[in-house]
Image 1 (cartoon, rainbow, N blue to C red):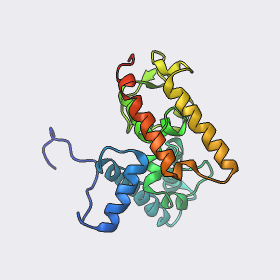
Image 2 (cartoon, rainbow, N blue to C red):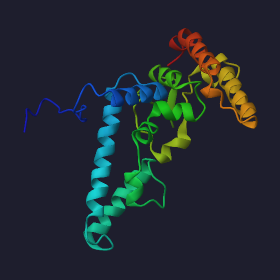
Image 3 (cartoon, one colour):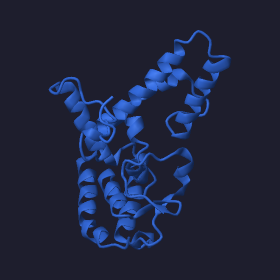
Image 4 (cartoon, rainbow, N blue to C red):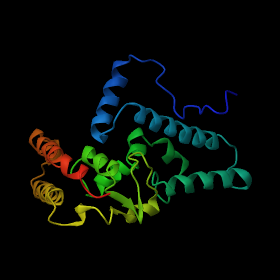
Length: 217
């Protein structure tokens, strides 16, 4: 059983440490989501395996239309819907189609970026760590915090943050990126995919580093 006072790891490490395909895939995911290390990816993969294992077990049950099997299936689907991983009318097969990035996209860091509160994933992590983001009235400084579906609408800058000022440099950078994206969408060009746009985002994040660090928490 192990020593009670020592917590067990909540994720599995790769079975083979030197598989080139897996390493390249994980490096790409790390870059796309602005992750600190591979451990965050391994945690997401372990969580995904647990969900898939539950779904496969329920699919193998002879009858899930009544009794305990039905209740267990409904509980699983409701739980994953509340976490924002599946749609309201999803089935067990939809759980098996989930990927690692579906899990990572529910992290607070990713949601801050998707909500347009940061210019990049890395800047989103910076804002969270420095206490610039809150959910409702609660400041959250953990980038890996899983944002539930009913918490998405409550995601915003902390009331004491200088980023509430529309004239703040970062707010102007975000608006500039948004306008650039909308303009290029009309030309069927993705600005995020261009090296020039990526460099602009990187420079904006680095330029705001000192200012965010000195911001009110």
